[in-house]
Length: 269
Picture 1: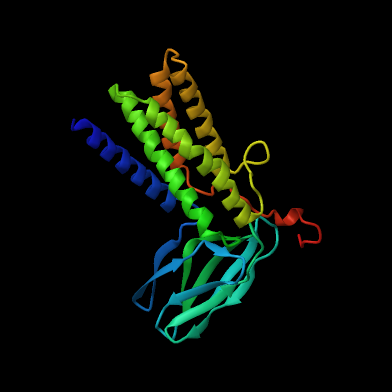
Picture 2: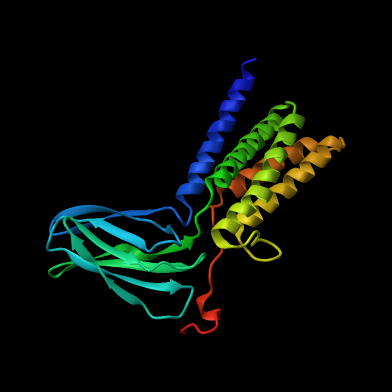
């Protein structure tokens, strides 16, 4: 009787670890780092996602009044030259604002800090921020909960397949959360943010969409084999669980929607 709660614990831990890994490795996760000027170290943080309704504020907590700097930025992907945006001091903070972009517009930027003859680039390599329209929490929160539940149930089904337990209920529940979460709520969230319901196959290469499609294919096959009592159904459920885990580990928004600036009419090249 103790095996069931133990398997649920394992499933929950695996799901939480995968969710955290996906978040911190994603292209929208903030960049953090340290710069040292005048013998003083400063811990800095830059956001890599912003809404289209305002410019993206950059604020660096650097009290030393001798430190100044500028932001070097440009739209990507494009062949346009970089622009320079000076940082202005407001008390202990150096501030500037990257110009807002339309949904799916991306900016590449990097900060040059100076104190006399000392210079520091932060981060060492340029980072990219992407703009999106505001999303409704009434859709976003159920989408996240549904996908998290699908991952949890998928892992539990895989553990059942591995340990000889019953798989039917967990397989059915996995699909019951995966379908609305990934193919109803997910496209609505994407349309709100970027103006497109689906940017995966056959319309594009958005890995967020394509990985959901791969997970659905794996679990549909496993469900069909299980409910038609096909030989190898247990292996199919285990395989679908592993596929779900692998696609869940792919950073969210990888190869996501973006404006290809050079392909737009009237844009500078």
